[in-house]
Image (cartoon, rainbow, N blue to C red; front, side):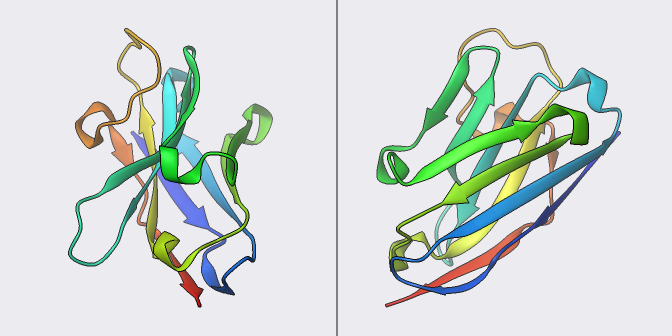
Length: 125
């Protein structure tokens, strides 16, 4: 089993920055990929950013503003979010995949095996 705990969310004005953290514990040695997703009220959960042995990938709306990074020694993945916009408001979830990586970076909810509880990000205009 793997446990994921997100932190770093909050309320920020448009144009501001936040850094989300996701700490993984448990059987993390099987980690093949990690990703960040978000879900706004009334919307489906959507891919934001992710990494695997295939590299990193971002959804178009956050390219140039968000950066995913990781600290393997601390079993932690980060999402640095700059130039935040009101449309970035959502609950942000960290996800981890232990199944083998067959291609690139995974962008679908069903492709990840473990999820955190989410952290709220609210961007005011």
